[in-house]
Length: 80
Image (cartoon, rainbow, N blue to C red; front, side):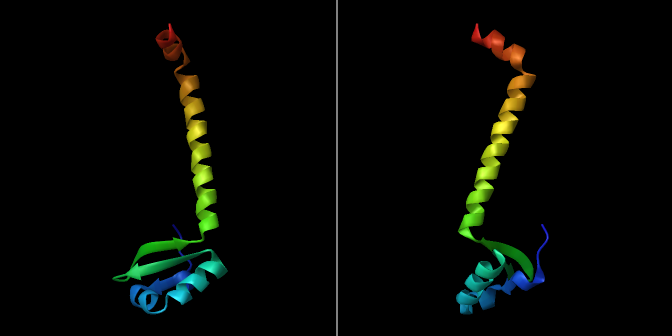
């Protein structure tokens, strides 16, 4: 995952000034909070998280269709 440096906030700064983190999320869609100089937490806009969930549900549907197609004969035998 690529992280834009303007979206990075230290844990200390996030604790002391959460409104800054909220503004970053509002302006850029996400903020990354560092703990011990490593990316630890990702804060994203709720609307973005809903769209990500929808995409994953679509992916599951596509995988299910592919598996059904690949194993059609087995499913037909099981249905008998």
